Amino acid sequence: MPQPAHAPFSFAGLWAYNSNLDITSCTIITEPAGEPMKQLHDRQPLILDPAYYDAWLDPATPKDSLKDVLSHDIDGQLQFNRVGREVNTSAVNKLPNDHPGLVGPINPL
Image (cartoon, rainbow, N blue to C red; front, side):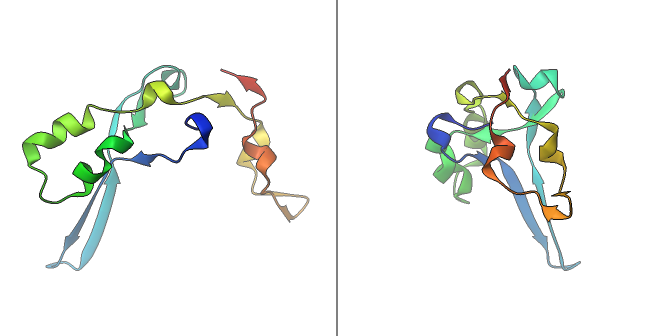
């Protein structure tokens, strides 16, 4: 599920540390799935538009502005490709299953 030119992308997430319990927690924000993701699941991670990374990561960004930041996603820029079942296998014949062909398209969606 790369962007054009295989540019990296980032999921919107939240992180918190509770000093009273000495617990760190995190979560990824999800949204209703768009096409063609909804063929696989009804929810998907919210992928931030790179133009809004700084605002999302800046603790000084007003909370009222964050809803607007989250409304700008890059779903329409993603490329979806079908991959082989081998991608779900961690080893083949006891050898690590880790090569670029795992994510190569076998049939566009």
